[in-house]
Length: 364
Ligand SMILES: *Cc1c(COP(=O)(O)O)cnc(C)c1O
Image 1: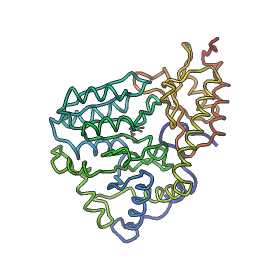
Image 2: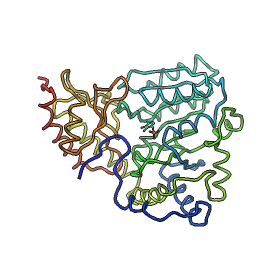
Image 3: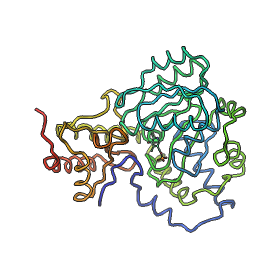
Image 4: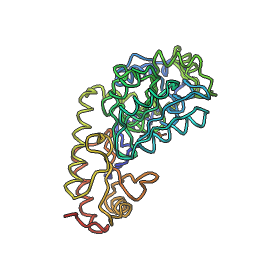
């Protein structure tokens, strides 16, 4: 069988896919009430949160938009901590809705420096919220969220976090890190097809929500809360993805989130060691390398897109490319969710076999 090794959508276990073949049910009937409540409760366990949690129909980006429009007003100053393409996207959504975005950008491949965040917040006391990407999927870097959170909370700011490719795969204790809105989505480490975004909402986020004037209808948290009280969603949900999520969450919680996180660390280590053993370099600062996606850069001369083509056509292994300015410069191995060390070894073997045909000369 082929391997989908992109950082989302990720492969799904057969029982998860089978759950989606169930006939449709009334999304305002008693059966859906039970499913929605079960899925919400299980997600709260995985997020390690007692905050409200909403499962919204949409992709992860919709969850990011929801985090912004529900807590901010046009003109609000927000600090955007960006270490890559997804950090930039978060900032761009805030700008679209009229926030006064103060960018704090770090070199791609590096993690954000909590000290510089502290300094930026000190220099601009008017800042209301901080946007942070927990795990930057475009560069394969994981920020030190625990430290960043202490800095942001010390300054008393709202903390909005894109942990779309982190939650469910790497450590992200939402309550311990006092994350006001944490966002993830179904097609990353959760072993579920795309279609649902999950957001947790703290008490402070609700306070901000009460005064937030950015326009919103579909993503309105007040609507989501009102309907969740009767076991419904305001709009028609992606019912089949809920069926799948229910099953996938049982599998994850049965294994135990601590074990799931440890599994990701082992698989990631196999990916990094495998690539290094071939003479390739890792794009991410080793101290902050992600356990859900590995970004690999070759020596000059290596045609990464040719490498991806060979693997796709000859090995049925699909790797991710580089985004934006990294297009053609790196390739990415997604290893979140349902993936084993054995499969990563197969990827390494296939890359090894293809390298000589892609302009690769092993560095001496
Ligand atoms: C995948 C991803 C997104 C975007 O999610 P979509 O579901 O494609 O909208 C945003 N941020 C991060 C960190 C991601 O990995």
